[in-house]
Amino acid sequence: MLRRPSKLRLPFPPALSIHHLSTKSTTTLYTPLEDIEPLERYRPGGYHPVRINDRLHSRYRIVHKLGFGSYSTTWLARDEKAEATSYVALKIAVAQAECTSESRVLRLLRDEDPEGKDAGRAVVPALLDEFTVQGPNGSHQCIVTLPASMSLSDAREASYGRLFQLPVARAIAAQLIQAVAFLHSKGVVHSDLHEGNILLRLPSSVDCLTPDQLYEKYGQPELEAVQRLHGQPLGNGVPDHAVVPIWLGAASQDITPAESAILLTDFGESFQPATTTRHRSHTPLILRAPELFLEPSLPLSFPTDIWALACVVFSVFGQRPLFESWFPSQDEVLQEQIDMLGQLPPGWWASWKTRGNFFDERLERVDGEPRRPWAERFEYSIQVPRRLCGMEEVGDREKAALEDLLLSMLAFKPTHRLDARQVLQSKWMTRWGLPALEWT
Image 1: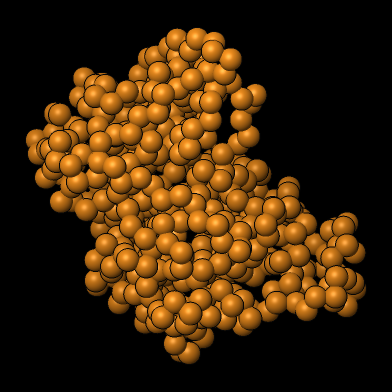
Image 2: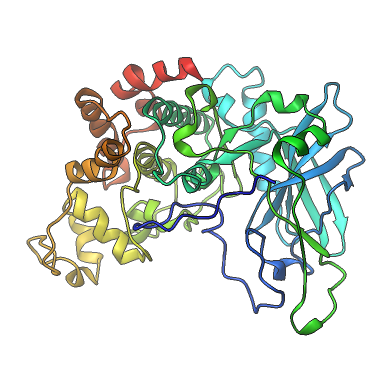
């Protein structure tokens, strides 16, 4: 079968993906299996055991596995009651979690723009169905959406160069900006923007395939026997076989503009600041805005999304993230941010108690290394890798427009950042972003 490519060993921090975001598992009880969810989470309150050919909700026939995360597994299913034959993505939450937040946000976004007039609406998955399934591990909330082929981080992992062609990078960035602008216009903060939550759409031609034809093209489901250590029997809520996720994707450099349509997914952390106050973020550390570290009493809101959006847009164009750390800590991320953007606002600088471990009062690094400004990071992370891979580089005019846009989104103070509407109307978006969408 076509198996998800193994992660490439590269001399820089790995791309962010849903697998990197998984919380640490408990004591190992089962023989570890590659590309399989933590089997220890098949327990009361945990994952729901699913087998190929199961039929859920008297409607959805399980055909393959699409992936997994800390709080859910996602399956490719055939909707046997649809007027036209179609495949769907069926996300099954762990029993102790609820999909109510995610499904509520998706319903809100659907109902706020039922005719899909806003361009950003097309980037948000349509909520096709929702239901509850009872199993040996509890009651599991399920949501049904359109399937996707892979995440941006998966596409990178399938490629040694880890780069998207420039027209594709433009199209992905422009769609992501449209999606965030749509969310913010409806009063919703996504709150978990990263490349693992940005998926490339599955071509509609796949709907024309029967399950047997799908298996012929992409391979039969690969089953791995589940074995408990020391020969102990499996529990009632543990499957006897685990399913390796299907690989429907391609290496990042091989994706064409026509294949660059995306879906922004995972709205489990999303909320409306007008009705809900949040102070904790689960966004990966290197994408978190500085106020989350230095002013934790400040509620999360739209500017925290804008900061993360700028970081993700930068990474879409390049090979490396904007802010880097092998094993990031809050202090190391702050060091990276100051390294590029300069002095913190006075109150924040004084409140950073460990600043002396990284900078002196003249903002020189105490380790003697030179600071890495924007221009150096752009060259090192975007232009040089493109040059070495024989890919088109970002031209001077577009580079200047990107710099103006992204640095305006990365202002230290949240109130000084561009809002989503201003990002949507930016020079880069109108001259390079929107024109790139003509090919998607």
